[in-house]
Amino acid sequence: MDRNTEEKKIEERVLLIRRVSKKTTGGNYITFSALVVVGDRKGSVGIGIGRSQEVPPAIKKAISYAKKHMFLIPLHKSTIPHQVKLKYKAAKILLKPAPEGTGLKVGSVVRALLELAGVENASGKIIGSRNQIVNTYAVLRALRSLKARKK
Image (cartoon, rainbow, N blue to C red; front, side):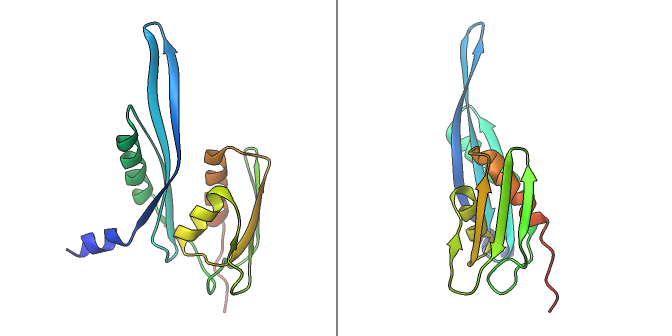
């Protein structure tokens, strides 16, 4: 009973669905991959990629993986505790804390990740990559590198 109420608080958001076509001797082999973010808006967030021959099972696999690999990020009031600069593959990412009432001044996958993590005020920029999967992993790595602020 308690676990069901806990699972209902976790929100899911599908960021990307890709149709992948592989050439084989018999023709084309088509699969779908889904990139999903889950979070509880209280500091826990996780991402997952699922692949399947149809879209709904791919999304289900991605959600399952993301829930298993959720982690807690430190929050200071309603923003991140400090600035983060990070390079991951081709993506360079910059995340900054913002004062109360600013909102999320970030784009694409960063907005979804920070919203589901519970961050209400932050600004940021991704430079160098337009690949949403790489950008998602870059943001995830940046969030993992956050240290809690001393009071």
